[in-house]
Image 1 (cartoon, rainbow, N blue to C red):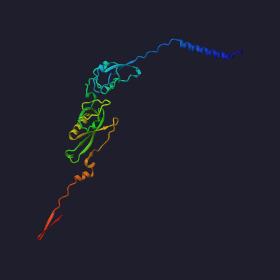
Image 2: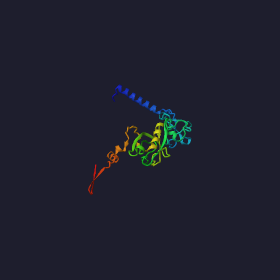
Image 3: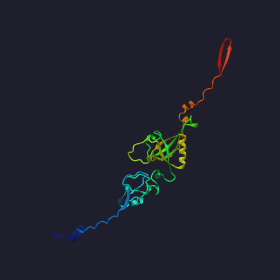
Image 4: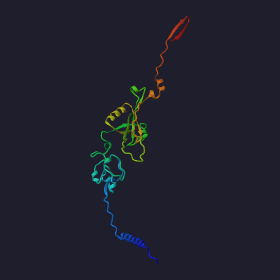
Length: 263
């Protein structure tokens, strides 16, 4: 039997040593992984609407991995006692400071108002309420139509506000998925004090109409307004054209005949 070359013996030694090392490592007892300490996060125990006062019955604590904890969350239910939501929460959603009204805010519509904003309710009907399709948190433009006083013969419409937030419709300040459109007598809008003054005057002097706009459309468009004589052109001008003056007649008597000539 021929002898193996010396380098082959060396290679076999290395292979057997490596195999023995792997077998020894597998036979060693595995040390348990270092446990990760989970963080406490307060979440909604059920769906919560805006302007709702939080209570221990509506909240629960869950354990989250530290890297998953959102900024502004809470670790204890007690820290949220008597706080009021400014936005809706779904079941299991973490409660965040930025979605809450300031401390001391009472439940209701005031919880939805940011600083320097007011809530103003205007009367609407099926047409001016976009046939009932306006819901809380929508964005609308406000158009006023005036047809009295100096505008009685030449009505005017003008967009007076754009991109106003709808805070509520009728007595409802929350929009839930699946809600059916409602025709309501009033809509509550978020305005500044100056906007509230102009809106009150517009409601007094004319009819208010709401124009629904896309939720992500914040573009402000300059408009000139619309007037009947410009919109209907020839028809309006004909109706407003003065009547021709009456013709004057000179009567001429020739014997027993009487003739009339106008000019």
